Length: 198
Image (cartoon, rainbow, N blue to C red; front, side):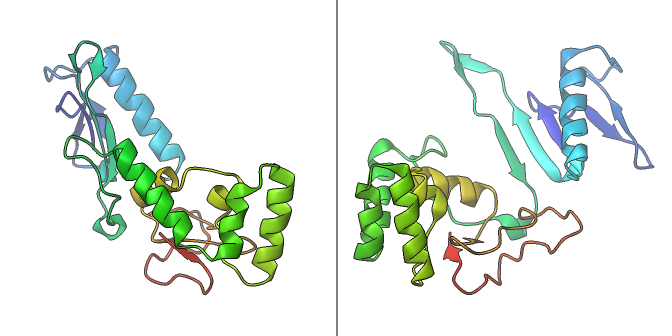
C-alpha cells in the first residue's frame, strides 16, 4: 500500500482495479500525491510487484530541512530478518557500530582472505580473490573484491530479505527474495552449499 502523509491515495474497488484519491478523499488525477502514487504503483507493477503488498510511507519535513524517514517495507513476513545493531532513533547503525561490525567481519575471515583488504590494486585483489575462491574459500565479491563496506552491504542485504548470497563463482540469485520472474524463486531457508550467510 502506498501512503503519503499517512493517507492511502488508493481505494480498492470490488475488482482488481484501483482508483486514485487525494489526501482529502476527492478524486483528482492531477494532484502531486496522485501522480506520485500512480508512478510508484506503475513502477512496482513493471517489476512484477503487486503495489498492494508493499508499504511505502512518505512523510513531511520535520524541522530545519531534515526530512522525515521514508521507508519501503515488504509485508511478507518470510522476508523479515534480524538487522545490524542500530541506534534507537533510526535504522542506520552509528559510525561506531558500523566500524565495530566491519572490524568483526574482517576478523572472522581466514587470514588468507583478510589479506585481500590490504591489496590496493583492484586487478590484483580480484586475481587473488579468484585464486582463493578456486581453493575453496568463500569470497564475498562486493566486500572482498570490490571493497564495499561490510556493514552497509549486510544492512542492504537484510533490508532486501536475503538470508544468504552466493559466494564468488556460484550462480547469481535469479530472482530477489519475494519476487518471481519465471525462474527458480529465492529460498531463504535453503542456502546452496558454499553460499554466504547474511
